Image 1: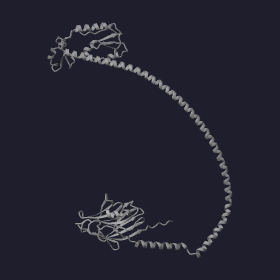
Image 2 (image 1 turned 90 degrees about the horizontal axis):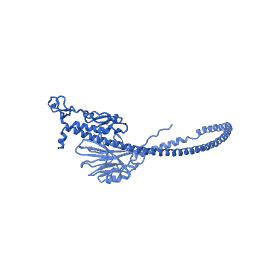
Image 3 (image 1 turned 90 degrees about the vertical axis):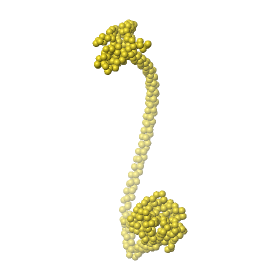
Length: 474
């Protein structure tokens, strides 16, 4: 029933009479703009029930339905009701002379039932005028509530701003007092600093005056000393003439001595040269030997501990007898047999090892602090490879074109002055292999067994000490 009542058309004459009664009540009241609450109102809207000034009416007034809503804006003069534009009594279509009962959403205008049959309005969306009016009223009420809520917020913010201003004024007063206190303290500190600086300057002045007096005294004393030295220098030429005579006498005596006494320096040089020749002969004839105790079971020693041969399974390891602490040495080893068969692998290791690790190397095969050069014949690759490495975990592999044969000489160049090791095969020098080696080493040879039929034999030829010639000083 309520919905049907809403859909019924309203009596505009009664509706307009209600509006006139409201304006008569408001006419004698002087009000203020409800939006800014500062200026006098010049407009009011009977549908919104809010008073507006000129600025607020143009900015804050939101018309829901422009054509209809504008008819209810009432002009005020000095806050009192002055004029009122009443809506027209007739709401009839000018073309068909029937009451409007529909609203076109696309054209935003009123239509009668006959307007629907026109060709222009066939595809337009049309709504019942009663429902549209109810929706506009609801929206206007919601907007009114929103504006009232915003008004309350503005008032609360104004109250807060006044409270904040009072708090800020108090804080400003406190800060002014603190600044004044600090300024007085700074003035006192500046006065104290100026007094201290003045006193220190006075003390410095006294100190420099004393130093100036001391300097004058020192200058006077030095002038006296210089005068005394000048007097002494005047006597020196006389003494020099006497000394020259004595020097001439000594030179004459030396000339006579050279003729009589043989040159002792030449004899000393002859003796030194003879000693050097003897040392060189000893070095050439000195041959290090394989240690008969520091060997493995698969190795046999012969030729006065200078030749070794591997026999049977297992690794064959041998160390030298001597210790090398300083100097530069050339250790030459000759290969008597090193078979290279297609179906067999073969290998030879030569190098130096720390003196303390010799036993562990021979018995347990520990390669700690060992610096060696390894030659391998790999039958799968049909190539000769060499490895240089310090321990089992790291190594560098190179391939060389020159194969190892019977009668080839492998040389270890041991420089204990620079603690370096380099290797030579015949005349091919492979450069420095290891730097920063141990300070107390001896040479070693390893003949690893790889297949049953391989038998290697090696002979230690000589160990030469390389003597570097000293440059003559001019």
